[in-house]
Amino acid sequence: MGVLEQFQHWLLGYWPSWAAYLVPAIVAFLVLSSFILLVVMAFIYIERRGVGRFQVRLGPNRAGPLGILQPVADAIKVLVKEDIIPSRGDRRIHWLAPIIAFMPALAIFAVIPFGPRAIFTDINIGILYIIAISSLGVIGVFMAGWASGNKYSLVSALRTVAQLISYEIPLMLSIAGVLIISGSLSMVSIVEAQSIPFILLQPLGFLIFFVAATAELNRTPFDLLEAESEIVAGYHTEYSGMKFSLFYLAEYTHAFAISAIVATLFLSGWKGPFLPPALWLMIKVFLVFIVLFWARSTLPRLRVDQLMGFAWKGLFPLALLNLFITAAEAIIWPGFPWQLLILNLLIAALLIVLWSGLFRVAGERVSFHRYGRGIAKGMALTFRHLFRRPITVQYPEQRLTPAPRFRGNLLVWDEERCNGCRACARACPVSIIDIETKKGDKGLIVETLEIDFGRCLFCGLCVEACPVAALFMSRDYEQASYFRESLVVKKEQFIAAEKRPSAYAYPDLEAEMPPQTLLAPPKEKG
Image (cartoon, rainbow, N blue to C red):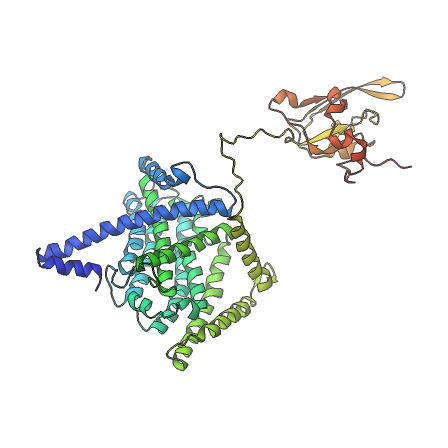
């Protein structure tokens, strides 16, 4: 019996029957909403700080100590923002969509057990209820895209339907293995059946469920629904203020729900030594969520064709094979002894390697050596970043003075070689070289030379056009200035020794210059 039923039975002895059924529902909604809001705010803070450390930066650190009040500041910001509805959008559906997207995520927690008796309602088809109710979230997302009157939002909504339906199938099939082992659809019974965590008996099922759930959460590398480079911001492009925050809240509530489901189905739920059951469950939930944003910080986004192909050609067949193998094991070893974990780990590794080898990406066969090791090395790299010192500069406390060399390669001119042919000026595509010459005893003499480096492309065409190698680029970045007029360099500045690059100011360093034409003048023969 769940907590809600216990509360109802207690109230029936004191209040009318209608109140005894209505009040517990209201209290459960308020308690659950408050709890989820606090956990979601913690998720937002942990993810933003965690992703920052994975990317060798600090993350939010201004609002409150260590930035802990940043989610509160964000909540206040969205509450005071103007609510905008597109003039060509459907006003009623536009209002209703964020509510429909959020409520299914909230309803999932009615059957999540936080302890042996800490569950709102223990129904014998709990996992079936979760699958059914979680599928309703796609309706709210599609309504948002349709009601916005925006083609980008509509494209994202259509992608949503295709993606969530595609990944819902392998996700449900991966759960079937757990149900076969536990022999029940009740979430409480599934936890009680885990003498050893089902992640060890169902490693392939866990992997399929985790990947498919990540796709349903629209998180990287499956965030095609909000691909900023393609469809602006996806289905919620036209949303602002509180309605946008409901979508944002729904996304993190779904992440909380998926993490709780993973912990319940595969990680023994509330079970654990010494600590209270609810605390054990929350520890496992936060660990699953950390893995979610760890993958987000590491893996690149898939293309839409790769996204759909991965579901139907990769996860779906593997989920079917996992189901058949689990059913066969249930017939041969009904008790599922712990020795099966070794066999199932080997089967999972073998199936992944063999099945992935049947496909090609960019004409190359998918191999564990390339892609499996690549993902593992990427995850290991971002994990090592957790222990590196962040390189973020805290402005204005740690304001840095710009280096004196930051504005392009300095062009060096050799007056002794120049014959005044003006080939460099003719080759310049932006006409920034101004040369005036006069006749001398041995030919033309450059009287004035002026180059506007503020407009220079640093393309090197002037260097290539010079027939006598009188112009060449330095390897140093020394043309720096805060004033536009100082970027106009004249003849006297080119030949001044203090303006020449260090490698040319010292002959012993000139020998170290690379042999490329644009970096150094050709060496004299003899």
